[in-house]
Image 1 (tube, rainbow, N blue to C red):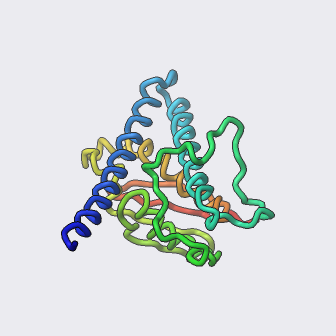
Image 2: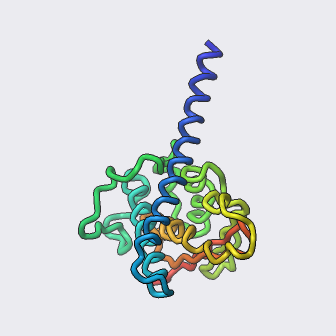
Image 3: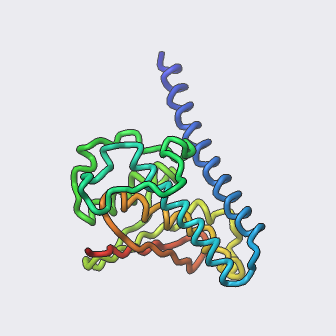
Length: 210
């Protein structure tokens, strides 16, 4: 009995690891595909590709919340998620981005900014990247800095300074993911990312007050 139970647990862990690997592979392919077919190799084209990745991440962040009604703000909220023209339903998004298994209405009953950011650093990060964010800092005026000292999407990149200029394309999707999830939770925000030394990175979240 004990051996069978351990096997089931190990199997679930293996599936989570496989989900994470699949997500990293899909993300790498998305980046490669966008840059391979970019008709404008200059700054303008790069900005367009980054915008596309950020937009994809934003929609996935929204979809994660739409798949669990407990995430959603009241329908009267100005930040309640709105479908974009031509967007697929939330159920069409890859299952390699699973929701945390124990989310409940009680878990997300709070709506304090700091609590929501802590939720992103712990539960959301664990669901997507199988780890928690390393640190969270705030100036208590609506600006938050989330630091990941070993960001999974940057680990495979070489650590030389010459590769730092490649980092933004591997961060744009996650910036959108954070912004989309915050939008689902009723918080409008601006999210940017920076890298000083690979594979560490920082995400700055600025809450947009209405």
